[in-house]
Image (cartoon, rainbow over the protein chains, first blue to last red):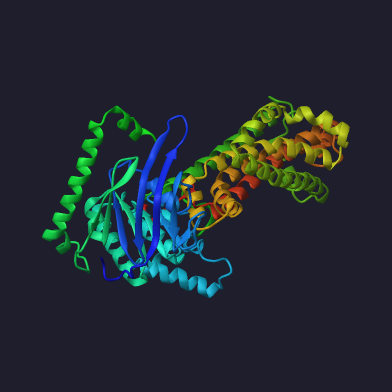
Length: 277
Length: 280
């Protein structure tokens, strides 16, 4: 366990399950039970189509799960909770093109906030992501990596207790991705933020987190929970080259491979379920 | 940003684009000059009698005179007043209904049959009904304008609402915005370019309908009524031609203003975007 966690659980998921009803009934989530301690960085990694997006929507109160309960700070999540911010994978669709960068961040600030304080909070969150000069630009004038930084700045300006991130770096190039990963580690340190980070990239999940949860294909369950006791601060070159890192990522990779081969072997039923939304 | 014509280039400008723009302006002016010359020659040479086609120079002079004639301008103002009120009512009503129908699939499919029945009715065919109910005053003109301009605004609003990105709405929801707030701060701005396109179409349709109503219903005032008097009663083809040209100029001016408004407030939409990438 990492040094920064206090031990109390900020997010608790109990018996979470979700089934999409309809013409093609699809069980996206089988059963999930896990906790995210306060101050922790938890990664969730799994094969594509493992119901990760469904899970995040249930956690963030955007969708009502079929089974189970999500607790945030001890309270059951019934509506969209105030203390949680979600960073979407598709930043270009999540940012509003008719608002400037400052306008996009201002969108999440309380409406009664005085003008100077509003400007201050926008400046502060842009500083945190290294985009101080971009306040008056429109999102579509920025590169993909910068747009995702704006989305992160917006989530920070909201001042949540926990950040949920849905494959946030899936559509940026490798160099930008490494920069954004280090940005998240920095943000976590500076704001004492609790982060639940969903990714399909095994290396990324290990590099960032204190704990990695490996998900099966849908209906998803947790295959294993792995504590990542790599030293901090992490380094893109040294950490990834360390023997322990390689060992962890290999273990996870094997586990995910076993998952997919087992599923494919189990017959056409599982394969058909994978193609459903 | 020096003049209106250079404010927003439609395409990334390359070296030499300035000179090709200038030559386009020159060619356009030459085209007008040629049209003027042909019209002048046809009339002066007697190929077409002056009673049918007055010399272009005379018509142009009349345009100049009418533009400073207070009585004529008063009639133009009457038309523009009906145009503005009709368009204003149309925007408020159609955008409101469009937002409601566009937010709910059930309301949309339920109302489609009614809309598809009403829409093809030509507004000019409603002039007798409008006269019967509303007489030949401004109310009649305005009612016809509202009816005929509602469709483009209504349909564009509905399409705009259907086009709102679900991720954008989900984003607003995830930051604690309720349905009304999401509608006002996400759906409406997102649909605004569609709505504005509808308004631009409506603005030109409104002018056509206003003048048609004045001409066909013999309205008590307006540009159409003035043309009717100048033509049928006054037998002054030069004035009718001049008024026609002015009607065209009004249409141009309206469109020009709306394009400016669109570029000022809706420059974020993909079709009008200026990114820095072109220069990089």
